Length: 277
Image 1 (tube, rainbow, N blue to C red):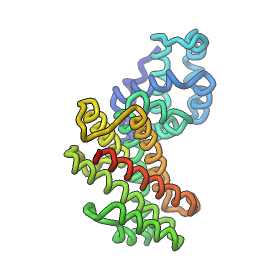
Image 2 (image 1 turned 135 degrees about the vertical axis):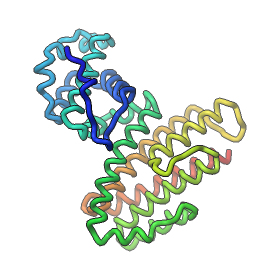
Image 3 (image 1 turned 90 degrees about the vertical axis):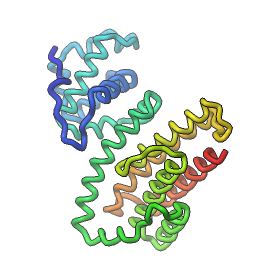
């Protein structure tokens, strides 16, 4: 069997490290069953892999539920084959039901890294669309980094009330990102200008967990709090994905944006309360 992982080349926006690809294949190995793999091969036009690697479906581990070295190797090669065919298949894999949740449980940092890779690619695509339309002038209405995020959310709600769904989504996303940036600054968390909402959220989560484990009274975190933070991360990512659809209002409706604004406000308040203690 050939080592397909050494043959991979990615466009910059979808580049994975060997470690990221390894974790991704382990997540899929532990979560997907044989039927899921067949569906994934079909979605990514990669059914040739199973035909070439006939032992993939014959591995006894599929039936016993055990994790064998051969199964791990086969799954790694399957992921490599899929991504080598088209690196954009990373998004197809990521959007399979349950994969995001399982990756978050496996490794929060890895989860945030993959979200950032996909988000960066969406950023490039969205930026190109915005530049090509007169809608780009609306960027002047976005808040600066020092503006109160809660006031920005109020402005987003006002725009929504006047049926400006697109700009409301933009302001909501900007409010969330500004909030997380300000939170990181206040907590002395190192950030980068290119950090996505998912990356910022992961950094805040990690900081809170470390403070909690150090038994510092300024952070009141228990198992339920950790669960809520993980759920908040998934909600924020869903909101983030929704915001990238704002160049076509047919993709979102007033109720979608209203729900997203409410969730964003709740997440911000919850994190503020954890930080204050």
